[in-house]
Length: 199
Ligand SMILES: Cc1cc2nc3c(=O)[nH]c(=O)nc-3n(C[C@H](O)[C@H](O)[C@H](O)COP(=O)(O)O)c2cc1C
Image (cartoon, rainbow, N blue to C red; front, top):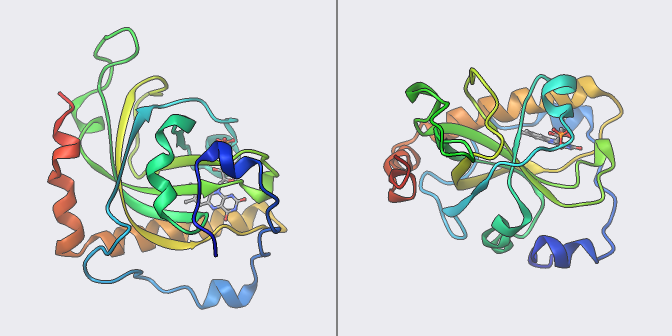
């Protein structure tokens, strides 16, 4: 397997089609993933201003995602595969104009799942890093600075014959992420200095 390169470099390569999700895969998914302590290449710190995706995540899948700009992806070149990752994220309360528009409970460090890939179900041509923060935000936060620490890998990116299959796997991803983060060596990243930079 080759190392992931920058988004721009990857886009120029031929890539094999994503495997189709099977019933056997669904039944064999573990509830906790990764070692008890994050191992290299994790932790991976990311930051950037949240940009708009196609908007299908919230509408079609009941799972809104915050996309990171391409310039924030180089740290992910240390991972060897596209797929679903887990960790923590934090959103700045300030919008692009410098106005404070998010309340305190929206801006604490929160658990997240991240999809890094081409979303084969939607046949995207470009690599994206989409973060779903497990929290009910009261408003959108496009343009806000977002910080994230990726701590582990959950599963490869798959293709689906139905939207329901994808939704079911995303729900499992969220559960797996929460259980995997509920270990002391993972929880301590909530107070990492990467997050304390935000006011
Ligand atoms: C945790 C998680 C797992 C995902 N897994 C897959 C996947 O295996 N295959 C896929 O095609 N898309 C996957 N997606 C991406 C969704 O297809 C994507 O969020 C959707 O295209 C919405 O993007 P948009 O808001 O840019 O429209 C995943 C998204 C999340 C948040």
